[in-house]
Length: 114
Image (cartoon, rainbow, N blue to C red; front, side, top):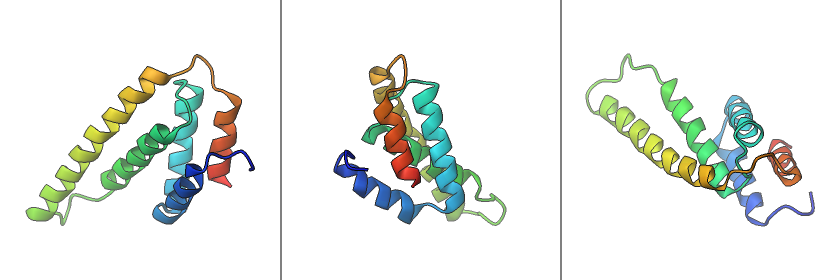
């Protein structure tokens, strides 16, 4: 893809490095929903929002059994911080949303998926 914004190469590298294949699918599904259903623009804010959604899903899947004391506190605190930060990105995306998805949106999401 020749017209990819420069920062998207870094974001794609982060996406591929930090997420498992199932987490990548989760991320892309959420990103497509945000663009197609909510009208959010494809941007670094959307990337950060979906990144945090994926991290929250990862944390949700950590079983609370065996998580005692300090470890449980860290898990709960991590979830709270990620949720708070995600809400900031959600508000920013809501302020910029479009009535319909633009063509660039689908091309950038396909770039991440390739």
